[in-house]
Image (cartoon, rainbow, N blue to C red):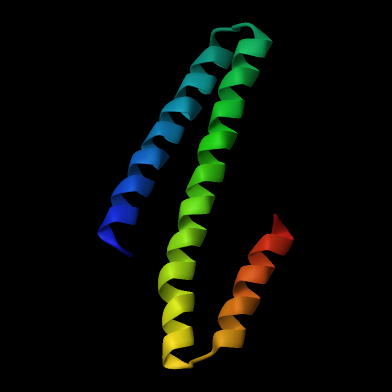
Length: 87
């Protein structure tokens, strides 16, 4: 994985982990439900961005290399399609 992506992804994952920890603490302390929900939306947003970055990296590296090397292009495209189908 390219270092720039790795650094960005790890940073975003740590932020998401902080949101998870906050939600756990909020539930343990019986905080207001809508405040908790707001935090869960932040988690979902963070995870969506992480998914976008992972897909971007995959397309720019693995899929691009398969196209350039003319190796298993159809397989790489199928992998991406399968991920989107599960979404």
